[in-house]
Length: 500
Image (cartoon, rainbow, N blue to C red; front, side):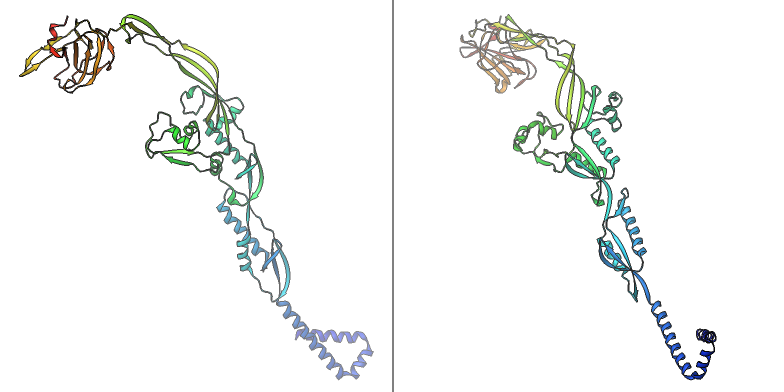
């Protein structure tokens, strides 16, 4: 009503301003004019109410475009912006060390719509499915091949330094000192091998071509430092294990897999030609192929032995075949300096740089007998031991014949041939134990029983007085002694009758 009142007052002022002519016209046509004015008023009021109703039902909506394609309508861009911030926060918890960003292009286009409907939930759901997150990372290229991605240049440098340390045996902090020629090997050698105190690392370098460049990638492609290090050191090939079978040897196993024995040893530290293989033992027969190759140059100073020579001297007082050491040999010592080149910790080449003799070797001198050994005895027998006494004579004892003599109580247990001849038997002989029988080729034979060891063999010629064995107590024996028999033309006789 206040609106109509204002409108009527305005209309009357207009009439007043238009002058008497308009007033007279209005008075003469008053009824028609009022009707016309009322109709106009009603139309104006309807138009005004219609406008207000329409205006109150019109809103601005925002079409969301993902990489140029519309995916829905939202009530406010902040709905999407807030979701992006929340989404990045979630990903940041999953990849806390990486710098992340949305990789897709998201745009908004405003539109005023009468009674328009929004799709906030649907749009956000679609964004979660389609939107990709990218991380800023460093791509590592080795010898032209992309190996992987790492967080940044500092991380890569630390990984490469760690690999150098692993294969050179010195700490990471000393790698740079080595490369600047300021490293003192006595301060921190770090090696656990033999002669470690005499190894000086001269240089450590990666021989491969390494390049890196910044790139945005999916965060799940970015490797942790440990993952990238393992990939660089081991490569992509999995180790192959072989289980030792009956009859296997190192060279046999190497041949089965078409590889050198030296390579097989390198894959199995501690394995040597002298290693006794066990059935079922696991042997690595194929190794990882590393993507990084660390070259190490070392100076090795080690003490080595010098083999002694052996000098033989003829001695006519000794029987042919007898040998006696006059002077023991002794190895000499020398200090040798090597330049050692390694690749990934495995020696590739060793060059001798210098050699200094510390102690000269002592020659071993051996006397070799030249006295001809006759095959026929003289018939005169010498005492077969170094002294001693007869503890049991020839004759009956304990109710049966003892056709020999027993000798014991010697200072030297060496047994000698009583006369020259040919060894007819040398070995184990029942109750005699270790036994030797010598045929003197003149109708006589001698038998030596209960020996602890035998020094001659069947068919060997022996001289009178030659050492043939050691006194013992083998066979049927009650103590250490020599059982000695003399046999003449097949009959056992009393040895004391023939011994001189």
